[in-house]
Image (tube, rainbow, N blue to C red; front, side):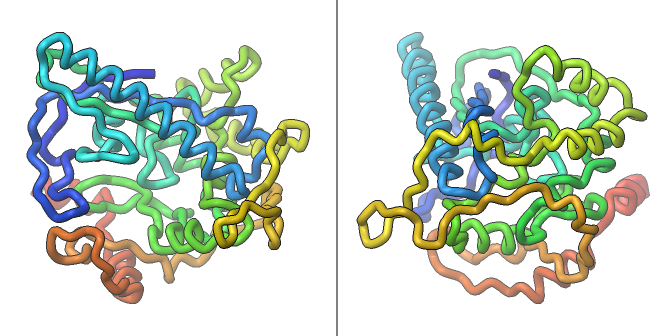
Length: 325
């Protein structure tokens, strides 16, 4: 799925990892998404050993496609630059929203697509070639995510909010606890990183005919959304389908691929988990980012300040009243 939008200045990164400044050089962007694969996701827990390979396969395909598109545009006489996981100068999230690929979800800093849910990776090409922009879409996801807390319930470390949205850097969103999320992804000893929220989301669907009435109802019938979220649990969606596991779990220890000593995560649905106390939830506004242009330099994390920032976060209602005043 592909969309076109303007590439606003705020979407561009300010600096590269080496500290050199980034110039917002192109006006338009082409952004597209690639499915990470429903079949493989069905056989996985979301945070086992195939998780990283699923992501990197989609990132690699996105890189090949983005570079092919950029090369073709340059052959037509226009400037173009591919932006991939290996070499990015622009943030894909604002582009995905502006190009109508999806909406921000409860998962947080993640755009959810109406047809594959969060199960995708994106690629982007910026260019000065004249293009007509698509428009953002609204398929009822903000209301659906308000009524569905499945990703928050299934997150292994409670990095996704059960509660309401907050304002973060001018955006109304369910801001995740990125410290908890990143810490688990990096230190997960029974898998490579994590995509548990992607695995268990009700929008993580195969796309077959039998699912289309429920997709239509979720988009068009607000009164049906809470029921559809509960039905997703009753049907066991998000459980591991052992018949779909085709890979061998491998961990690389001291440059040698071996059978993982600690095994692999094989989580089922945690239907009994109740909403957590989120008083220890943290968020880190831009003013708490590391100083200076060198984004690769180490910098101590002040979690206590992050917790205080989360507790003091402005609500969307208060922000609207402030803007009106």
